[in-house]
Amino acid sequence: MKNNLIDYNEKIFEDIKHIDEYGDEYWGARELMPILEYSKWENFHKVIKRAMIACETSNNNVNDHFPEFRKPIVGGKGNIQNVIDYHLSRYACYLIVQNSNPRKKSVALGQTYFAVQTRKMEITEMEYDKLSEDEKRFYQRDLTRKGNFSLNQTAKKAGVKNFDKFHNAGYKGLYNGETANDIANRKGLRYREDILDNMNEDELVANLFRINQTKQRLIKDNVQGEENANSVHYEVGKKVRKAIKDIGGTMPEDMPTPKESLKKLEKEKKILLK
Image (cartoon, rainbow, N blue to C red; front, top):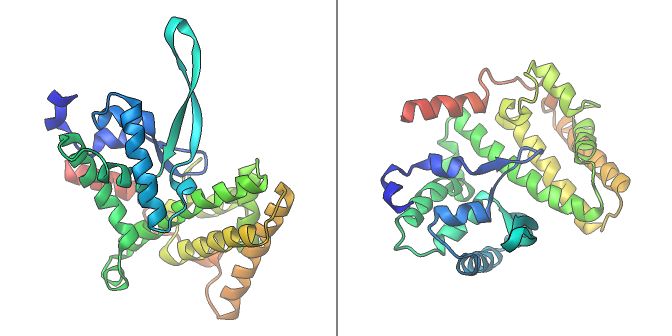
């Protein structure tokens, strides 16, 4: 690993990035550990714990960024052991590299990679106004994905298991009955193409507002049960739609679809940077 550090670039971190079924990105802690040159989980786990404290101190929900799960591994004599692992958000990875050994060159590279991306979370209003239309789309899409991740955690605690149905309830309320598939078909997207990559700034903002308000309702009303959670999501979506109508705004389904998807723009950007 150390001999190859000269070849390190963002690809080494992108290669271990995962996208779950809801379009949310995450990194596995045990996959990140060797890249940051930690050989023992005990030592790396201490770094994770420090990052969790920093997350909590910044008034962020630790469970949103460091969800824990059990991962089966083959131990001695072929025995299967269930060990602790984490699905880390980009922000969690940023905090981890900030709390890692700075003398490790891989950590310095990780700090550069995750800091550049996480900087978007700290953007000011003045800086935002200077962004291009596509840059604003990137910013709002990333916020929406993070919002969906946080909403999923809250919905899971409320008893939601069928997340496709749960998310479609919100879309139906906001889009006058349209599901995610209906939205994709109307936009003329390919199979499994992300609808968030094909929304303009205003459409993304409307969805982010729906997501955040749904999360707050689930928490404030202590909603329990899948059907109840679905109903809340639909009601919030419908109220956001009504608010847009009351102020004379453009309905989400009438907002223009950008000519190029953000995924395509990301690929073009990578090509230009080579």
